[in-house]
Image (cartoon, rainbow, N blue to C red):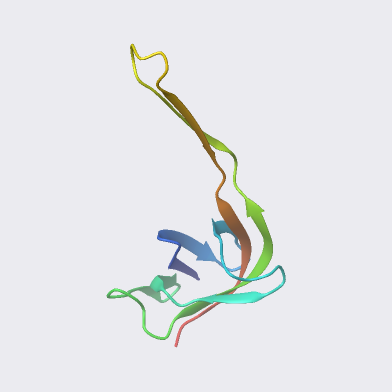
Length: 105
């Protein structure tokens, strides 16, 4: 069985025991979180597509760790202007979770 969930403005296709990295969630390592925005469910009996969400469906996951993504550098330079440069770095806060169960009512 698989599900398509939405968290942090992004969509993820997940199945049981999948490990994925999502945007920062307010939970500590070892906590259990539930994703209620299930957009689609699939399995042996076919596919259920929500409009916009599947009613009564939920995906539960265990938080493995809180981490940060790789450093991204944004460098801007304007041509023929020797003093017009800017360099900005960014690291995204992330949460690593393991999907434990997909439930549909």
